[in-house]
Amino acid sequence: MTPVVLMRTSGGPDTFRSRTLRDRLVRVAEAAVTPLVPADVLDIFDPLRSGADLRGRIVSVTAETADSATILVKPGKDWAGHVPGQYLRVGVDVDGVRLWRTYSLTHGPRADRCISITIKAIPDGKVSNHLVRHAQAGQLLHLGQAEGDFVLSDPMPDKLLLVTAGSGVTPVIGMLRNLFSKAAPLATDIVLLHSALSRSEVIFGEELRRYAEEGRLRLVELHTDTDGMLDVADLDQIVPDLASRTTYACGPVGLLDALEAHHTERELPLHIERFRTAVVATGEDGQSGGSVTFAKSGITVEGDGSTPILDAAEAGGVLMPSGCRMGVCFGCVLPLREGVVRDLRNGALTVAAPGDGVAIQTCISAAAGACHIDH
Image 1 (cartoon, rainbow, N blue to C red):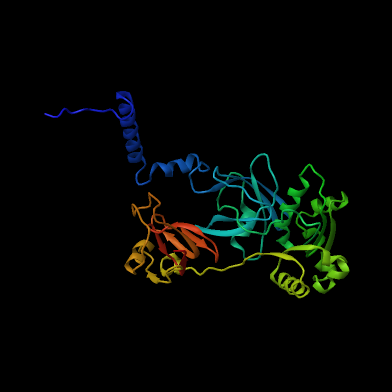
Image 2 (tube, one colour):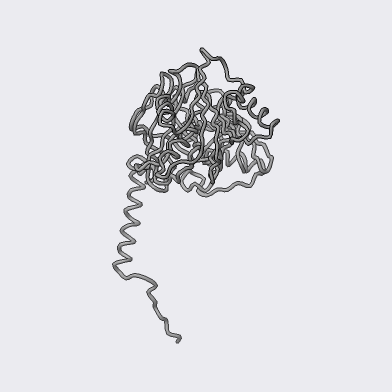
């Protein structure tokens, strides 16, 4: 008879008992919070933990002007940082609908690891008005990681022209705060040309004027209530050495289009950041469903508002990632590039503006309007 050799691969009786006890505790915890899972409970007690969906807790809300405010946020542990000039997506629940907007980061290095965004409330803007008028310390925001290439070059050019209008100054203030926080003196010659409705409407006005008084930059303010709109044909008079400067610009579409045409004709270096304003159509009461288009395959399927996108896609011939099919394992997550979906567990709506990449679980999400998914 061949002898049988019993081998202990790792640990001992105590290890086995410990593992068994741990497994039992997990099962008890799962039973106690059903239909949730322990991760849902952890979200309540530690929503900023590593491995959770990226969120941030509002630390403070500070008014900048009558219609704008800076929101200081402590991000979750998985926040990867940013380069001044970049933006991030912010998700806010307004009247039961999760809406996503993009906002520029308005700070340089911070020892407390907090991040800040500055928002100007626009007429009929659900998210901007909600944040400026109603956001309070302690509230949670959903966050995306920093994105965008509107950043200063390295090495820095010898001469810079920064052209901003209205809230277009927000990415630029982050750049300036970062530059002026360095111990080494800044060699770059900076001109900031900023246009706003009036002197009192200049976001960060006192800070920018202080930089000018300290000789850190030359500030040119144009107030449309007295000076009219900026005409790019006047740039040569405002900035006589325009041809020797690298221009960074952020503001309304009309201004940026005019600058682009002006600089292209003269072959001058120009970097532009365009803010997007988008309206996403939602099905009636979020219940009527809509078409779902998958970008890579080009296949479009119809969702009836109650069928998971995962099921509708598979029925339409789309090969989909999946796992538990009940919202637990996150094996079915895909980026929603545009559209609105409804969480079949609680009815919550999630909206993505064109170009966004909001992660959704297709196994528990149904179309609540036309959707575009990157898959």
